[in-house]
Amino acid sequence: MRTIDRSRRGRDGAGRPGLLGRIGAFAAGILALSLVAACSSGDAGNEQSTVGVGISGAVSDAPFYLADQLGYFAQENVKVELSNFASASDMIAPLGTGDLQVGASGATAALYNAIERGVKVRIVADKGRIQDTASYMGVLVAKPVYDSGQVTSLADLRGRLVADYAESSSTSAYLNAGLSGAGLSLADVNRTYLTGSQHMAALENGSVAASVTVEPFVTAAVNSGAAVRLPESDRMYPEQQTSVVLYGERFATEEPEVADRFMRAYLRGVRAFNDAIGPDGKLSGPTAPQVIDVLAERTQTPKETLQAIVVNGVDPSGAPNEESLQKDLDFFRQGGWLTDAGMSLQDSLDLSFVQRAAQGLGPYTKS
Image (cartoon, one colour):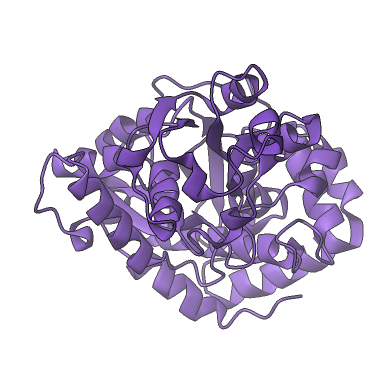
């Protein structure tokens, strides 16, 4: 692997027999259902296949962690090697060469430009989106600026310095959607680009008036008193497709049967994650304590943080929101961030794997 950060724990779940015991009856029931599903699929006798998966090590990687921890991959005779990458762009090249089989990437201009340059990857499933009830992204305003009345709404951001993650990313598309609703555009604000961990410091020291930020930094900044989250944040861009699952072309074409098995297991992980999400968009559903146990172990995120944050959504059918992908692709094109202005979204998509997986599993019913 190239440029892989293996410093985080939880690469493939080995060496943690105690965790499965802690999740108790939840895991036992899920494993039993998984065994039935796997056997009914006719794949129980397949030779075990190893699949390399590039992730960021974040809470949004929950479906991969759950599918691994709850035995979904094992029941499909798939051994996953989960590797943390410092950034999603770092995994694109190894996906294209076949050194990595699966990746989790933001739906960004950089991804589309790589595909246009001939890097052989396909968007195959939903990995993360903003829920229609609550957003794990938010627009934060430095508390002194908010309390003084200078900025209390999106419309007040005109001419202000706003921290973002990158010039052409899902956060910039989200901010643009919100500003458009307030009669502004990105051109009406001044953006500076910082990592998520730097946003709170910038808000605290007054070097920016506001920031567009993702969890868990949203909750951390609000709880620390550094910022106020604008209420409009939940309504700015519901169902925005922020990240996707990628298959390398070689994996999809040379090992299609393994790719199908992987997708079935992944989709079971998606559904287990959905079971834990409550009406408030947080991990407050019936199975949340058990899922929080898994995520706390795999991501090294404190349980109290996992209980407090709004999480990303993932469609239980696994299908990405094509309307959102197209909207953001148009946004990147209009901003001049695409190297091929005529690129089609359909050139990037292959939803056949997730469609077969969803059909095999049947309709989702929330636990």
